[in-house]
Image 1 (cartoon, rainbow, N blue to C red):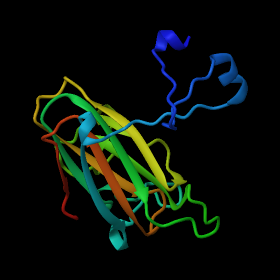
Image 2: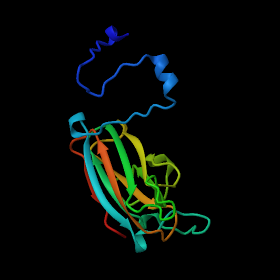
Image 3: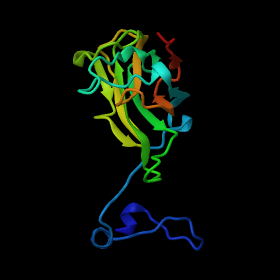
Image 4: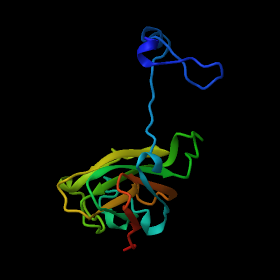
Length: 192
């Protein structure tokens, strides 16, 4: 009830309203929640821009291109100084030219964070994966939560690869890394 929640209706509009749970479930089919990842809530943010172009548009191994060299794709080192939570976002800046949708991107994209000592990732080792964005998909933005767990000896440097699924698919992107470690450092790894 309203008294249990200490809800006090105000005369001015503040965006807050009260609704009984039965009315709520009758009126709404979905509930979307978002996390606030700001410095004020204890998160550090690192933002980097890049592009898949020329040899950095290597893509992922596939039936059509089994010899793809993962190490040619853009990669980043993420140094974490203590066990903490993290969140990674990869956003392509190029929209899908056909659908013009704000949700679809030009390419199918993918990222993977690995316990690779800050070295370039040249193969997928399932035992070293911390998180990944899932299967490559042509969304404008893909995300994944991660846990920098207590098993590592900190500070530790992880490796992040960002790729398109198809060899030669060019485009620009932005990668955003959040963590609860205010000493986190993110650097672009030099190209091969």
